[in-house]
Length: 280
Image 1 (cartoon, helix red, strand yellow):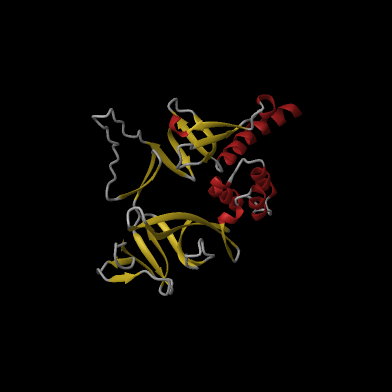
Image 2: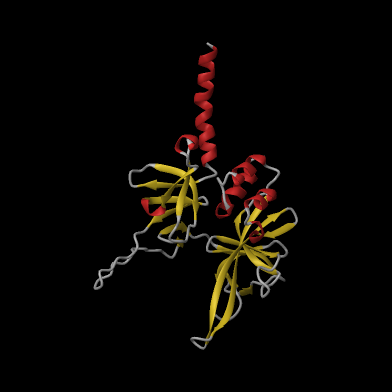
C-alpha cells in the first residue's frame, strides 16, 4: 500500500516539476513537431544553437547536446515565440524573396532567420506627475522623440518631464546608470526587458565615427544590458565570468548551481533573472 501511495505521489508531482522547470527554458519545435527544451545561445550569429541538458551525462560523457536553430520551425526565446522564415535563395540569376507581411496593426522583431509578430499596443507616455497620455510616438531623423496625443498636440519626450513611455510594445524608463563607454551619458531611457524584484534592461548606444577610407562620418550602434537590483543599476559587462555572475544572484543557491554548471550562461540573462524573481 505504501509503495502504491509513493507511486501516485511521484506520478502527480514529477510532471508538475518538469513543467515548472521548463518555464525557465527556451525551446524549439522541429519539423516532426517534437519539442526540445534548453537554452538558446549565440542567437544572432551563424553559430546559434539550442543547448539541451543531457539527462545521462555520466553515461554519454557529454553535459549538453547542441541543436542548430535551422532545424526548428518554431522557437521560444525569452518567452517570445519566433517562426522560422527561410532565407532568400539565389542561383546567380533569380532570387527568391522572404514572404514577411507585417500589417500596420502589428509589430515585428526579427532575429536571424526567425520572426516574432505581435498585435501592436497603443503608444503612451507617463509624466513625472504619473499621468498616462496615449497617442502616437514619432522618432524623426531630425528633432526629439515625441508623442502626438488625441488632439494632435506634440509632447516632447525628455527626462525632465517624461519618466517612461511605450513604443512598439516596448517600455522605456529613464534611469541614471553607469556609462557604457567614455562617450556615453549617465542618464538614458532603458528598455525594460524583464520586470520584477530584479529588473533586466537593454540599452542601445549610438555613436558616430569618421571613416578615413570613405571620408565621411558613419553611425554605429551597440547594445548593452543592465541589471537593476535594489538601488543599484549594474552594467552586465562586469559579470561575464560565471563566478562573478553567480555572486550577483548568491541569495538563490539553486540558481548559483545552474550558473556554475553552465546550465545558464550570460547569453541566458533573461532566464536567469526570471528564475531568480520567481523562485525564493
